[in-house]
Image (cartoon, rainbow, N blue to C red; front, side, top):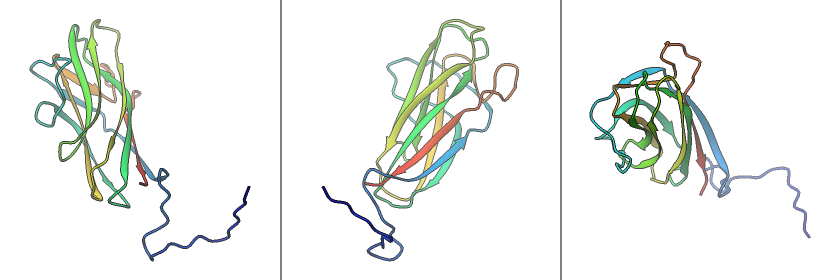
Length: 167
């Protein structure tokens, strides 16, 4: 068995940093601004969410430190459906270019049991350093309330954690 003891690790080229594959380079937390999103049309469980067939909840700009790293997102929070019954609903995260990262689907079967949690994770392996992530939604009901309940309080915070991972 060997023991490695060092006082300083110097980067190979100035300004590039020291990258260890699989390690977290940076973490950012997005508190999604409370918003009511009006929805119309229908949604089916077999539909793949895209920028064209979903509604905007909000956008988050993220600057990666290295273009070849990947970004892992963990999405979590509650959504109120304003007493909707019997309607399929989805919350999804996409990269601005349309790359699908992940989604959570619910079929709202009972009213008065809200808000409901929508939790999922996903990853973006596309290159580049300047990224924009889009939180999107759709429901066959009339609206979805993020970060608040039907009584408009703000006790149901919706968050997204972004982690840049070295490759």
